[in-house]
Length: 332
Image (tube, rainbow, N blue to C red; front, top):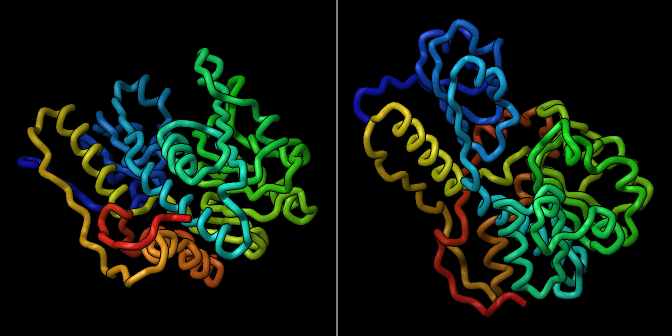
């Protein structure tokens, strides 16, 4: 975009001195936008290239006339790809018969909806839990208690909220895990703080859950290393990190910036081509796991948990299914 001076720095290096004369910020979750960062600065616009925005002090921004935007749905397909691969691994390695299983999806926004649509085509029974939507009178939702009673797999896709009747902070707590009836697999790709780490570890040790798949952690990057060692798959908050998702987020952020300042049309943003091809496969499931297998990310993190931030900041190229062409038998 013409006439724009851009400074590129790691999110953790953005401080008050750096932003003092900035008109706008384009950030991700590692940059906390509050009075400490913004006081006395020229910032009037913030775009976070993420779905979540709990790292932005929205009340402070409103009091200072600072407009902000997020990128809802930008990496929903990427997170869905992660869930898809996890479920295929559960079927392949742990004998879970997906077509005979019930999945409980807690939080039915962009990601939860994509996951629900995907697993429905596999023949899974789907339970949707979204109390705010149910409270607005929307149909088709069940209670958290029904999820706890009937789900064989539980996956969290909620925002992180600390207040209100439907707060999600520690939504999965000791009481929740203690109420589980079917020893489900537990997946969290939403926010680490939606799960009480101590309660999750206790549920795993006590057999209330069969195993857990954790991409988001409390106290990142200082994650619970014992839980990391014990979990089936543990990854460094990268479920939404496909190149496709990042391109979407970048485009949405730049379009918001351009609209706010009247900068004109944003050029197309195209992710790099895949760095590997798909070999001849005997099944669609095999092809999909060749495209992305979360065991790879998990193995690296388990070997080097101290590199959590480094692994996030230097994530290798990962493309979604639409970037590939392959021919194989349908998923079974």
